Image 1 (cartoon, helix red, strand yellow):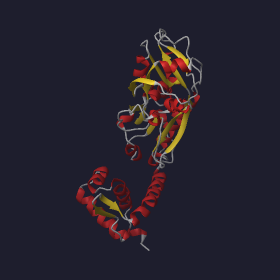
Image 2: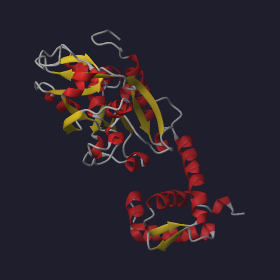
Image 3: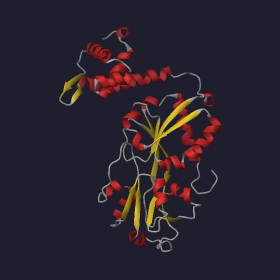
Image 4: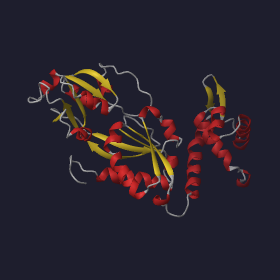
Length: 320
């Protein structure tokens, strides 16, 4: 058995990053080390565990079986150390000066963050929010703790992430008051019209939409497919605000989360109608890295956002 006095905790940090990056140069950059220092750390790790740990193959640096066994154990050890190093005193939001980086869709940004910012000014006036687009962020950025929180609808998410549902939302339609089907808004008339598709789930740089791939088009089109129907989409966009503006045109309909339509409830250029068929509700989720789960300021911020989200009214123009 190894003598614990001979083990440098930094080596476990090196190992965790090496196994995540699977590249000595990238691991060195991540840790702010020179490449020779990182290579020396890998040599010491190999001696410590009596195993090569990472082997160069045609696919790059590949972890050995022993390294794959060690990976979850090392993460648990480092998380435990992080918990032990957290200050014993409670986090003081009013005295905090920090930047919180959040990836949020413009749906979440426009429906949730006005209330968050209002209360944040009263409770933690020196906390600054840096809100990023889904295309600005990858799951790896979140896993590494470079981004504090992600708030969006997600088709998939790494199992290691912590997540909660902030709310569920139904779907509604926006269309011009001069749209010819406004007074006869049925499934039949809905299908006879031209439509705007809007969605940006998940994260990362998006790709072009295939109109024939119903499953990837999302909730609305999947619900129509269950009825054996298909709508005629003329515009594809990833921005809710743009979609709502386009709905002012006389010949287009946008179907989007109901809370987003409330932003236009007093706008005479558009009308709101219920979707004339059943669409399963969407879930707005908030997720974060296990590396930040026990961080006291981070815990306060996510609990604060959760409280605000769940206090918001489920009816337009109603007081929370």
